[in-house]
Length: 312
Length: 318
Image 1: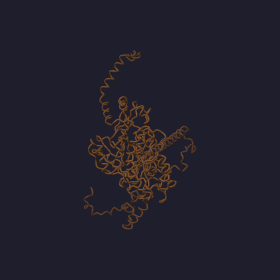
Image 2 (image 1 turned 135 degrees about the vertical axis):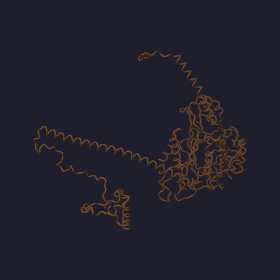
Image 3 (image 1 turned 30 degrees about the vertical axis):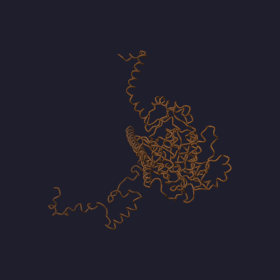
Image 4 (image 1 turned 90 degrees about the vertical axis):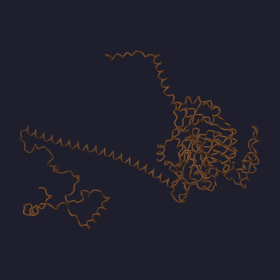
């Protein structure tokens, strides 16, 4: 997944153009056909309509391209190490490339390089196994690395940030979807209720009309079946609505916080209770009892003039 | 001193072998030049020969003045990747470049050089040369990504010997073979080098796509279960993480001498970046003229092929 992320965000500055994609000249044709194809590579992007000019222009210089095959071979022999040098000195591997890779397709090209490296490593591993030499680094071997630890920390930070971003966006999306669904469900429910209400009203009207028509004769038989007998009519829905008792000192927040903070809150509450005394019920200080309502004489007459703040 | 002796022997042998009808080159062994029959006879004794091949390659890495920051970091990354290199100061003049550089290389006692030349603060050319009289190659470098990019997450031991992988197309032609040889010698860390570390935990990839040499560097990472054991069945779970840097080389010319000499190979498809930029500008310059021409062309066309009168043209006219 990291590789995918990387490739998507990678912007190669180099854009290579082959104007005639079908008939690409390979190095073998260098000596024969040089003027037909042109290829540009540059550090900026070049538009394709230059191809006409380029073809004509490069026909001439291409022909003067030198290819001294014998000289090349000679030089190669000059500099190469003798043939019976062990492979251990060179450590070079040749990997087959099955198919042609389009240069401009970033992902395919990088994949080709990756597979080449992987196959090469496997082959090398086999060779090392056969020679009995250590190959991979054991995990407890600590030595200086090519990138500093600080740099690797930065890399790790960036990767974590990316992961967190993805997760957050996922969560946001899920929350949005859930909210939408919940809204729909709620709308459905309201509609249901309204319908039910309307239906019941209709039924009552019908019953009344029926009774009217039949002249108020019937006794109990004509009562509409409104469900009074079932005993369910005056029951409230069993769902608990949020509410707190009158004496609750916690402001309605005692129930919240589930299991996470329950233990902590309880400990806290007990500690505070032991230190400051139990708080007691809230707001029951000034309530009239049966005796006090008739006890007008218990008012303090002397304070009547003393309290200036009281509004007159 | 196997290396030096080889070169001097080459000098002695070459003039004799110049003619076309010469027999094929005698087989070269650790001890020098020998005819093929002698080699057959001596294959047994060779393995017990006291002289062992030692890779005494030293690479000098320098750059020109006025180099870009990105290319400077690329150069520094390469310096950290090659423990057998020596970094030198910036080289000044451009005029007598070849001679100066050759002298510098001799002075430092190196056998090869990587020279980064930055022109106009934009284009990077890389020279790969073998010092005394070896071939040299000039490349144009594109698509540079340094190791400091945070998207390249791998890491490996500094100085461990790399595995070099080449794609098959390196065998297809002579100049690619020469380049492959040079790359092996320059980018491969010598075996018992002072600064080299054991174990092989990274891989270089050189592959030819679209006539360019692409370079990648991967870390070999295997999930370790037990602490000590070398991984047995872990070959399948081996993954590669990219360490960087990345670049793409476009060969321009191959010279027979070091930083000069007769040209052995010239890339027919190479267009210099200056030319490309000039063409861009020229194309943009002609935009207005082309538009005017297109307009007149259209007018002529319309005049020469008049439209038939439309039968429905008067339908809605009251």
